[in-house]
Image (cartoon, rainbow, N blue to C red; front, top):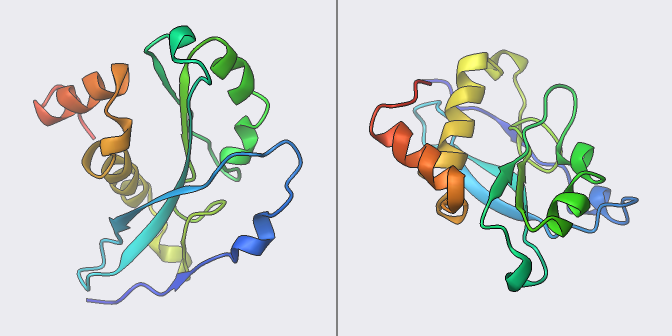
Length: 145
């Protein structure tokens, strides 16, 4: 068992980002090192300002490499205006999420496992609309990871 060393970008680095007024939210996931290491994962969770206009739909925005939720800073406002809730997690190693120090920790399988834990296992905050339906399908064996 090799404990994963974790790096964390200071919050001050994210102050006053242009067009990024979103409040940070965090959830912790298992690093998968067998030593009990936890990784803090950042996510944006924005909801329409007026409940009456809410569509009841949740849009899950997933970035690729080498980006983070900042990528969606101009997409989130029109989605909110259309009444959709927007969830945009930063993958482990990106944006405000923790970064394992050893580059060999970053495997596709680990990213799938971490994201699965964020969205389906730890993500009680996501259980709304279609995301809840996806979570239910995953638990019932309808989705493979």
